Length: 77
Image 1 (cartoon, helix red, strand yellow):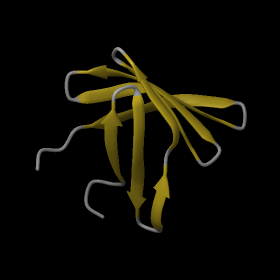
Image 2 (cartoon, one colour):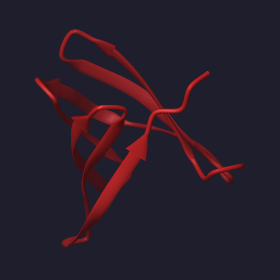
Image 3 (tube, helix red, strand yellow):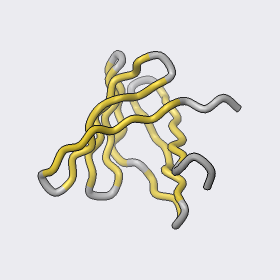
């Protein structure tokens, strides 16, 4: 998969759904919500909290008590 996994998001008002497509298959996001520029969702055992900054989401990924930086960039179609 060129460029790494692909996160596909769909928004309906404050609710967000989507899939993370990676080399071993697809995983749905759970509990997706948006409030202003803030996006939160879970993916498996990981919790994602990010802020929209232009064409980029930047924030943190927390899993098993460990937090690390997380980011995604919008791809043009």
